[in-house]
Each structure stands twice: as C-alpha cells, then as structure tokens.
Image (cartoon, rainbow, N blue to C red; front, side):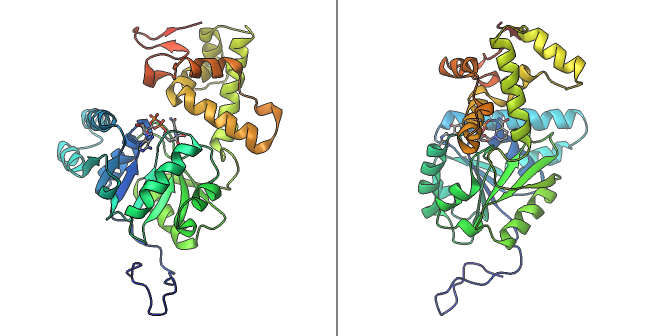
Length: 309
Ligand code: NAD
C-alpha cells in the first residue's frame, strides 16, 4: 500500500498494515550512528548517514569498515557480504539526502535542544509516510514526537552500544505512536537480528533507569574516596561479575551522555536520588568525555588505558 497517496477527501490515509522499511536514514555519525548503519547495511538495507560534521562521516565509514573486517576475520561475515554492505552506505551533510527514506533514526548528541533543531531541519525533507525514530537514551518520546509533524509515526528505538554486538533494542511508544509504526519498528528490530523489549515512555526507559544511576553511584564512590578507579572497577567486575567496571563502562558510553541521562532522570522524576555526581559534571565540563575524546576515568593515550585517579 502506498502510504503517500492521500484520499480525495484530503483526510489522512487509514493504515492497518505495518509499512515495509526498505531504506534507512541515520542522523548522527557518532558511535551509535555508525553501529546502526553497520547492522542495517549487513541486513541488506540501503543506508544514508547524515551529520553536520564531514569528518564525523569519514570517521564513521572508517570505523564501520574496521568493525565489519573484524567480523570477517571471525568468519561471522563473508568478504562478499562486507563489500556489499559497505556499498549500501552513503553519507551526506544535507538532510535532502533522506527524501526517499522509509525510516529515519536520529542518533545525535543527547541534548533535547539539539534533537529539536535536527527534527525542524529534517522534517521538510521527508516523504509523509516516513517513520521517524529517536535513539535517545532518556528523553521523552512523546515530547520529541510532538516537535515533529508526525507524532503518530514517531517512536523510540533505543539500540545498545556496541550496536553490532548487543542483542537488545528498547522500543518506546510515545502517547501518539500508532500501531503500524510500532509493528514496523518491531519487524525492523527482528530483521536486524535484535530482540525488542517494550518500555513505557518514562525518563531513561528501562536499561538506563537502572544502569546509569549505578554508574553515577560509582562516580560518587570515587568522589568520596571510597576507592580508586581501579579498585571500583575491579570490585564490580570480580565482586558482582560485571563484564566491565562501571567507570570503564561510563567512559565507553560517553560521560556527556551519562550526565545528560542523569539530568533527565533528576528533572523528569523530581527525585534527589538521581542527583548527578559533581565529579561527573566536572569531567564533562573539562571535555573529558571518555573513550571518544581520549580521556575520561581512564587515559586512552596510554596502552593499556591508565586510570586517572
Ligand atoms: P556521539 O557523541 O558519539 O555522536 C553524536 C553525533 O551527532 C556526532 O557525530 C555529532 O557530530 C552529531 N551531531 C550533533 N549535532 C548534530 C546535528 N545538529 N545534525 C547532525 N548531526 C549532529 O554520541 P553517541 O554515543 O553516538 O549517542 C548518540 C545518541 O544515541 C544519543 O541520543 C545517545 O543518548 C544515544 N545512545 C548512546 C549510547 C552510548 O552508549 N553511547 C547507547 C544508546 C543510545
């Protein structure tokens, strides 16, 4: 069914079938954007990535090629599949490159004002039937959807980092999200080999509602001198059987993203137990955003990375 055809009455078309997603647009070529592009391209979907920074697009292509090469070396992917997947990915700094997309996912910086500006610039370039998703880790899907012309075709699709490895995708309906949109995104998650978990639209959804306050508590433990970076990470790895220590994980996620999530929890739930640790604030203010900037709780210019406290 062509969802772009308006009935003669001018009323919106009635849609019962979930639309088929055949082409994907991604906004934001950071660690999540390139991971989402990676899994979509390997699943056979043509992908266009848009970012304001040309260098972010070049970097994303390099990282994606390197990550798919790793899968080739482990015989998870053949070299033909790698070549075909990379040929499906194009990049642009112009939103008009997304005018044919069936589905666009926003994966820009975790700041509501940035995401609003992105939707304002993006929407006029999309076909009316295009589903728009956000990969936000914490921000209200209802509020973001209301900033677009299509809250009924707006949804949260929250991938985990690193996208090619992590199985889960949280799917979050805003109050206006319609059923075909939800089904289409559920089908897409399945096509990408992911397991979907439905979360209601509460601050930080399920995973980050639990995970990021734990990370924030680890930063408090460091701030109050309960233990050093190594002692805290070693304790949680060997004492709680976590594959990564909380501070190592914070660096991996990005300290700017962790802080934004805590701020959304703090403001959204009006509960002081979500107060961001002042040390986390200070690191972000210093531009120490973790792995992606070369320094966070560890210094990544050293091999192996050296704890900074
Ligand atoms: P990142 O900092 O690695 O990348 C963000 C990208 O957005 C950058 O390339 C930047 O140039 C681009 N950008 C910023 N403003 C833009 C604009 N106006 N138009 C186009 N591009 C713009 O961030 P990330 O870790 O990839 O996170 C992206 C999103 O995914 C955030 O909403 C974050 O909360 C979410 N997320 C992150 C993780 C994680 O572990 N890092 C996990 C799940 C979801």
